[in-house]
Length: 220
Image 1 (cartoon, rainbow, N blue to C red):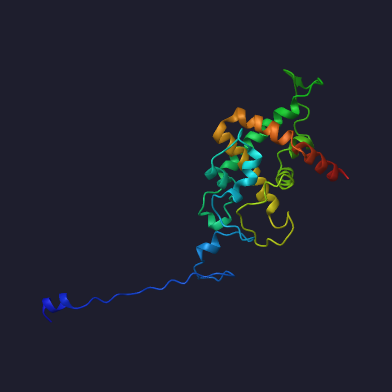
Image 2 (tube, one colour; image 1 turned 135 degrees about the vertical axis):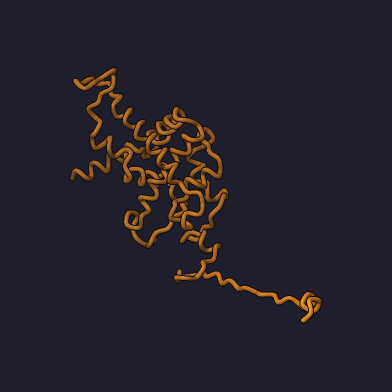
């Protein structure tokens, strides 16, 4: 066959079909992105007033963060196989700020003891209250009672289980740590400590009230 004939022959076009699976997950089938980034309650991932209203309403203008950061705060790495920005690193930052703030809070008593140094009473450090104020249970319940976990992007092996068994408690606490981390990242440590004092200690119920009830229940 001449070169001229080869060049003038029509090209063969290969068509590739891609099947995007919806419904119950099946091994080996590519999942439809529309469903992969939708929660079990039908909420689609993304920045919207509805998705961010609980977080932004709690923060107010004084402690406001960007919409992108707010979406990251409520997104756990279990959602969408960690493809979207998730809150793990913000949670690490927030937990450290909380540990420092509440350590200072429980030691700032006006009643002097032998352990008082520079006006700070070190006796409460290591107490149940000091431990539980920043613990997962207290902060998970704080998120729930203040409706901060109403919309979160995460995945459970069974969303029908209880608050604790489904993993929602753990994810909610992680979100609280990330929220504090996001405020710290945006406004700095001093403002973050003001945020904790105003929004956590002065809330109704406060983180201290929730923690006290946990301690009382555990002692019975």
